[in-house]
Image (cartoon, rainbow, N blue to C red; front, side, top):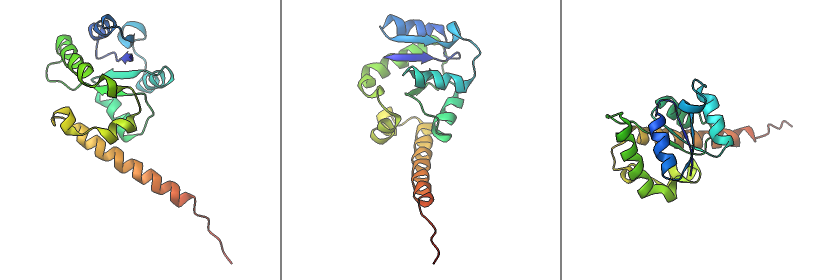
Length: 150
């Protein structure tokens, strides 16, 4: 898989992913300090899954509707690299076949229970994402209506 490891996630996580055979771009090692919009553009253009513990990316993707190739948001109590690697290892073992694909596939096929029911933010963002998607669909339908006067 192709990953972009955000600056805050760290180079140890990036190095571990590389050791597992993944193609990895580490913001910390290669382009420190770039803004979040540029990080998302790189992910989209290079078909990379973003790995981060920065909630701002969740906001951009789920609430603002930024296009992306995938997002793994690590919100852990223990922020040490070893803890992140353990969680990633379990995630990749259990869900690697589901990580590649569109966010729509993920949001339509995964539930909080699939994630052990412990991620309240996932539930909130998933609900908001689905609501925003429905509103956009309805707005498009309204915009397509032509006003005709006799």
